[in-house]
Length: 93
Image (cartoon, rainbow, N blue to C red):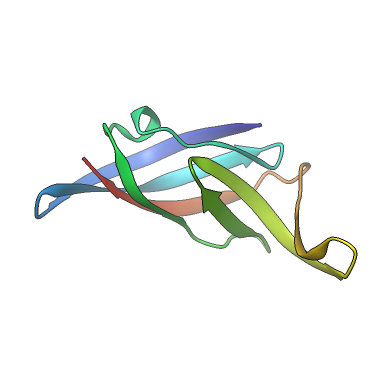
């Protein structure tokens, strides 16, 4: 699993820094670290849906999920073969 970050743009918002950019995901997901974004701490992270995928972020892990509506494993599953490109926004210090 790997993530490639590009087009990073920084903006001060009160006492925080907002980072916007692009992520290219390979193998279905990866880890987002503060250092990847030029931050010390990530307080909030949001990746926009792209190419039919919904992005799921939790505790530094970003997964590309898609709907399959199979009751056996739930409405969303992780696609480990997709390589979506998406925009994101993070807030931190």
